[in-house]
Amino acid sequence: MLFKHIRTHALMLALASASISFSVSYAGAEDLRIGTQLKLMTLDPHYADLNENTSLLSHIYERLVNQDENLNPQPGLAVSWARVSPKVWEFKLRDGVKFHDGSAFTAQDVIYSIERVRDFLKTPSGGFQSYTKPIASVTAPDPLTVRIETSVEAPTLPIQMTAILIMPEKAGGGFATTEEVNAGARPIGTGPYRFKQWQSGELLGLDANTDYWGGMPAWSSVTFRVIESPAARVAALSTGDVDLADYIPARDVAGLEERGIKVESTAAARSNFLQFDVSRDQLPGVTDAAGKPIANPFKDARVREALARATDRPFLADRILSGYGTAAIQMFPPGIAGTSAKLTVGPPDYERAKALLAEAGLSDGFSVVLAGPGGRYPGDAESLQSIAQNWARIGVKVSPVVSPFSVFMTKRSAGEYPVWYGGCSGEAVTLCLDAVLAGADGAKGTGSLNYGGYSNPAYDDLLSKAKALEDGPGRSEALAQATELVMADHPVIPLYHFHLIAGHGKKVGSYTVHPRGWTSAMRAAPATE
Image 1 (spheres, helix red, strand yellow):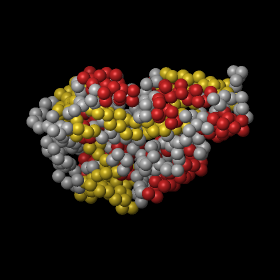
Image 2 (cartoon, rainbow, N blue to C red):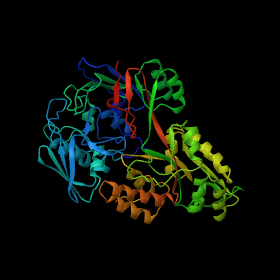
Image 3 (cartoon, one colour):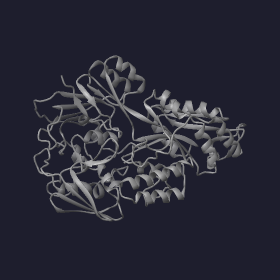
Image 4 (cartoon, helix red, strand yellow):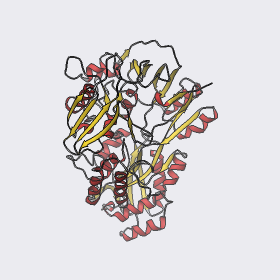
């Protein structure tokens, strides 16, 4: 689902010291060593909806539906799908696929995986249940057909299926617990790589699946080394200790290129933004020039627009992110389905911003605390300092407050901040349009990241109608119109879409960075002589 801002605190204690190993011999292509910031938390592909787990376990397990670089759905374990009625989807499965233990992949494995997520696992953060919530029943008319009936119309069910990795049905019935999956039995999937070893928080070792339905994998074995420090990852890549490294800081790109390291990047399918508290009448950290509390200025759209116009987004992308970022004016980068080509980023307009503040009765400006995490996202702390300088030019005095991510999250949840730095990502732009900008509604599953209490019934209605449309140009245009409407009200200030940067040495001929931030051996091609 969304790029998670919540870490799962209830994983089993056994994970902390887990060390599981199996050995498979295979003589073929070269070994690939990857230095990654992604720390695999569990071998259970359904336990925690976290990018690190999904990214690494996708080597072992596969999805019914994949996503390309523009987040468009592509065949995976399902070769095709069709909406046979408003509430029924039918998926045709790939024939001849086998799990790593040699057993055949069938519709029963899909049923097992969906029902395990929907009915069995009770994870602290809800895991993947948001994807299965509308599913009323899953049946198999034949071994290679899955029919999914939903309780409400689900026009984007194929996209939702990109989140669910398929496990084999448990022999003897029932569902495997997460403890059982982590206890030492070899994880079995249909993916291009077989499980070899795992040391929690340290490494994941994989061997090529020589019987893979998609053909022989490019690498004989793959080892993911967890190197959480960006500096240490860069050093390991520079010295040749790893062949590929992910999440490279922009500041290190030039030095790596001087050493002959090739760097690849793409704009992430996400945005980082400033979010206003528009729900309360008074806010902590907001005062007039004399230090006296004032009414919440962010309830006035003119104030929000003034601050948006005073924010130099191109500077953030070009200077703070060293060019490895795209200035943002909406939730996802332009070109991805559901974004608007009409929204463009311009330079700051300080004079218009001052005029808007004056119209709102704040010609003398005001003081505000601007909060954010430090080191969680590229350019987060530095962006707050730059924005403070921007806003000072229209009379708004900013006190940037940077905290470790966990501290920031706790204080934001407690309502201690008036405006803050946030982020959102996912497999489709609708997730962020829903989570960040739509009104909070538990029944509809909207507003989960709408911490500022923003409410716009006209937008909610337009978004709801757009989401009811089946995937295609009409749906994309309707989502773009909803985006245009809500962005004109400035409930958030999109700052940038930071670029995901990876580097590789000479053993790797090319690497394609995915906008979802997945680090994948399947996207690395060996160099040719």
